[in-house]
Image (cartoon, rainbow, N blue to C red):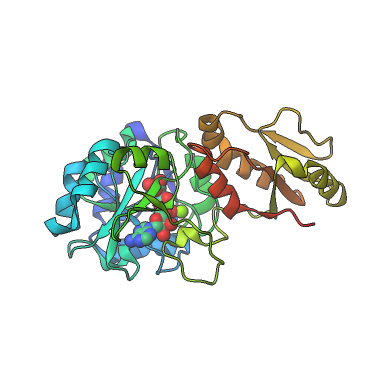
Length: 334
Ligand code: TXA
Ligand code: MG
């Protein structure tokens, strides 16, 4: 299959045409690029799973154009609670995904066998234009091969899915750079399954009681949200994380496994050639925006390992950054 890449300026109508024909299309959102398809049609949704190589039990996020579309998309009014409405009012359009009980209007495949569905209203002019022109709900996981790093540019999507999907809409680099916050509203207490740019602090400020449910589970175990699998968002090169206090051990590791890539936001940590140092910002917003691109650049060097310095803060967006690093890397071996 030939994969077309079209600029957003001319690609919106074309995207809607492909989507109406039941084909998947990759497009930018404010978080990462998504691979969208009609969420009401089994055959369209199946093509997403096939292109990504995604296990069918891992459910997809359904994207809607307008917060007001949530109720009709879910299908049963009772499934869209006051709490969901409150969060949608405060954070939509934006990087927040809400898991609520599902109704009959969507393909069962988007739920991966669950009684719930994940909904999100993205805040990105291209995603918005595609959703409005298509005029229906789009199932859209991140546009990468299952288990690997999410794409934040059209070139990243192409590197992952060239020949596997018909169309990529290029809308430039995503400005958040990490996947949306996932909050499960189907249980007694709202539970964060994946931290993101809508932080736990922001959620607590909006609705009070919120619990954290993003305990990492081993890859073989079943998870509440498959993004919780230990190995996820990962580069191909073996990647290891270390805290600043382990810098001596990291240097020692680098000496034994020369050459390695170092991903660091600390100006004073540096590995001499033949190692390669990838400098990330110490500012959480900048760091999040460039992390996945840096991971890909480091991966592309085909070095023997990637070493990543862990942030020491877990406040705000650092919680989401630490979460993704936890899943993309192993602890530094002793
Ligand atoms: O920022 C984002 O959310 C991006 C953009 C494209 O919108 N999408 C994205 O989708 O990251 P994906 O499929 O890569 O991640 C969705 C996460 C997965 O961890 C999935 O298991 C979880 O949300 N999820 C989806 N539906 C769920 C459900 N009904 N119950 C529990 N977890 C669910
Ligand atoms: Mg993903």
